[in-house]
Image 1 (tube, rainbow, N blue to C red):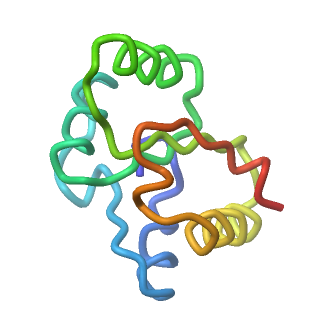
Image 2: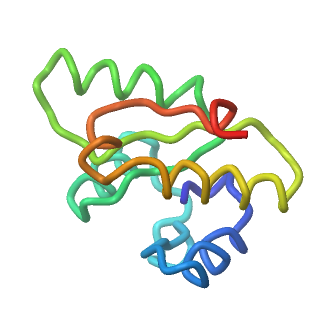
Length: 110
């Protein structure tokens, strides 16, 4: 999870069996967005963020340069319970392979 996302979401997702970590849990707070995406890719993790403005262009850049990433999941700023519900809906609906190298929107998982 990107640093702009509620840190409690990582624990909530882990309670449901998903391997989720928050940026702060892996001591990556304050890193640049390109560094965050590269780290997530290296770890085989999709990154969930509220920051579409920066992460969509990064995903597009990856596409055109042939760099792989594990996925970008974009979420609007929503209430914590709804964030958990939508994140779980997405993660239960798609495999890691289906998320990889794509941009997904939690707004689509109501």
